[in-house]
Length: 255
Ligand code: PGA
Image (cartoon, rainbow, N blue to C red; front, side, top):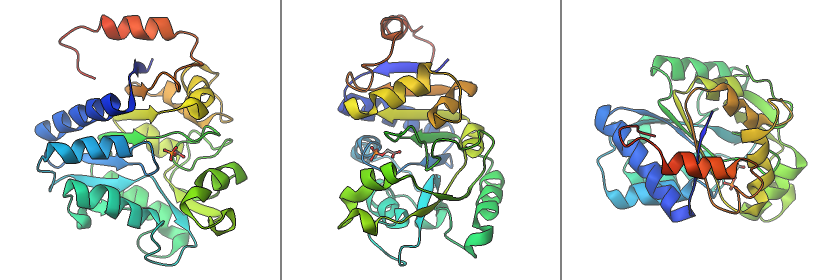
């Protein structure tokens, strides 16, 4: 079962930074799976403040819009550059974003080959959408899916409209790591904050394993850490047990 830790956004960012820095201390060229969106900013801000040398770290972004003009400030390549590569001092040539080379028709397979060639993702940072998506794997996505072009739900386009002048400017298509890709990562670190995420978190952690709740794919993974604030945790039935388990975690056991 996933380890559920309930703490505020700042503390979650600090704990995630601890986990990442412990990984990089063991493996300086660790492979990180990088999520965009508001949620993981807590992690990147905490990591940037630590000032660690991350120049050998390799990164694979989870997803990207399809159809934005190159260099668009809301393309995930631009967002990853602004929010992750620059503040953390990553080497841009070691960070890939889906669809960043070759024709879009073969970009998914190319991305999968690159992840395998890198030895796989060591730690995948994840947010979750209000509709339960992880990456841009919308409800119905196969648990075996790999990186491919998909169509965003209207709800996701509306959720992301805050980054654009209007919802009509949010692309309809995207390219995303699949649930199968995400499941191959060695450690999943899922973060969620706020009441709007409570239902998606309950479905992911405690609901039936179903393609209708893409986040529930985490139940099939042997090493998952879920960092949630009180509001995002508010619909979890077994919350008392999660608190109890965290309070009684053996001192020798890492996250
Ligand atoms: P958010 O997005 O972190 O901006 O809420 C999460 C997601 O859509 O996966």
